[in-house]
Length: 123
Image (cartoon, helix red, strand yellow):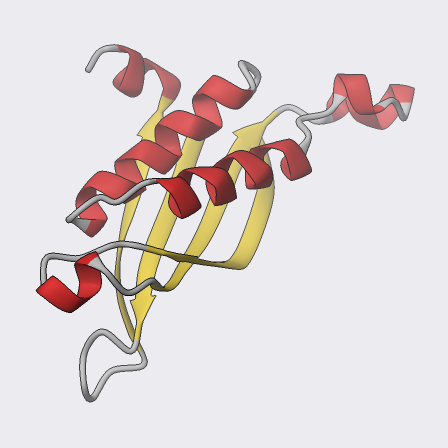
């Protein structure tokens, strides 16, 4: 299966449990790998036959800008669901959400999850 990658998408949003994190936006970094079959798009050279990563990215950005989850665990799961909802041709998704600078001596902290469409549909 082919893969689409979204690298280092950075969006400012509310995420965290500390009082200051509930009012001050911080940078949230997202990386995503989406498993899709790209053969039809490669042959036709038509965007309608392709999983449009721009559409997916816009949905992720809007969700982060408008949501206010407490936990990274929740946000990363929501982003996986957004990927599957945005295009039915995505069969599997691996998403990492990071909070740069959240820990004093670490560049970043984050969570990565990998789900199939069937796993998410069965939840």
